[in-house]
Image 1 (tube, rainbow, N blue to C red):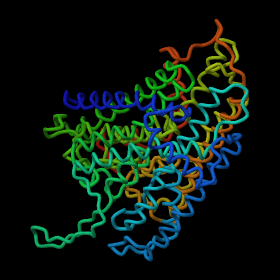
Image 2 (image 1 turned 90 degrees about the vertical axis):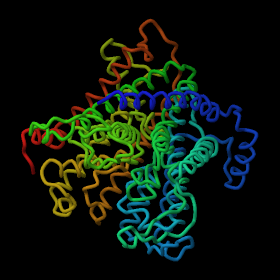
Image 3 (image 1 turned 90 degrees about the horizontal axis):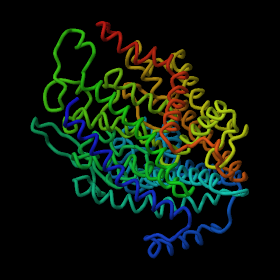
Length: 575
């Protein structure tokens, strides 16, 4: 670790915070139906959308109807993107004459983009036509992100309302998420990325002759528009197989900063929007500090591990100079353009959120460096997390934290004036249990079946980590991967798709049930015995609850994977 790398981390958080605070204020006005600077242009468009789609904007929904609307919206989108991939050979804007996508891969990919996971068992430039990338992937990047944002807004209304039977209108919330937030930001970021040299065209692939006289096909296309929303919407699906390590998807140091900041911008902004919508900005600030502290720890550990280099080399007594500009550290699988610090920031940010984009190959990280992204996802994608989903996941942990605090002081737990009773706590526990059941369940099956073991490229603990990472990424709707796993098989396409659906919709439904339950409650004025939830004590308690729950659940399997791999390498043992 060096001063230049630390400065990059500081600049990153400064840019993120400076953008998130005003964005949060803007989104709070949008979702509250208040007038914003965008209204003169976008309000007429919003009315037209409601009229064309027969949406009754003034008709709110009970949480069950809200949940059903979110599910049906997602199912219709899944069917449409699946059809586009299966029919792409017959559709226009296919200059490379891409064939129809295989049924199991098309199903996996359709589920992936519908659930905001964007897991990719394919190479984008060698599998998908331009129309598929735009009409399928890019559109789903908007709609899946909007679904997560809408669910969060419904949960926030549950805290803000008194004895209400409704939590809003899903279609209104989704439309406003796209029209007022995702689309304007995507346009700005797209233009910025084009300015950095990122392609945005319908030109056919270019064939060139290399210096050695060989023929090479250079893929291109409408890249910038998909890259913008893949980061802003915490989607992560790459136009190219190498994702943000590809020079067309991430051409410069500035584009790298834009992409890293974009991954957290809306998720961080929603934390501040939460504080404004409930009328107490201190609560939003406390959650932001909690998330930021956990992200800083993750970046620090990952940066330290990668700068220290391979523990096997250290065990051999080789002196390494941990500098981004000098030999030393673990540069395997990393872009020299970005170095170790930016690779560590990107890897931690992309898994602290549910983005899943990569500018370095996580499979090539050191065992401890690779464990950081894995742990980020295992904690439930609550360190900012996906747009909307990260914050409502954090609020689930808040409910558990105030429940524990209530037990300690002998009072009924409450948060923001709402009593956390048996129903809310049970639903919160259900949300938390879904993650380990899916990750460890599917992982165990893959590790005992020959079809699962066949996909591993490494033996020993690293092979276990490859499989564990895949199901953690799928259940957490992240989409990043340890690239050594061969996932494009019937077994992995099917089981990973199932994990994605579980991680998305079996979380959304109980979250909306919590929203409906809270909306129906009275708001109790704070008293002398009320536990404050905006100070350092609560932040510490919340972090402890998240870490302890994650540690107790996943430490045994982590001990068999990256931890034992690190110890074995330090002892000079290879597998």
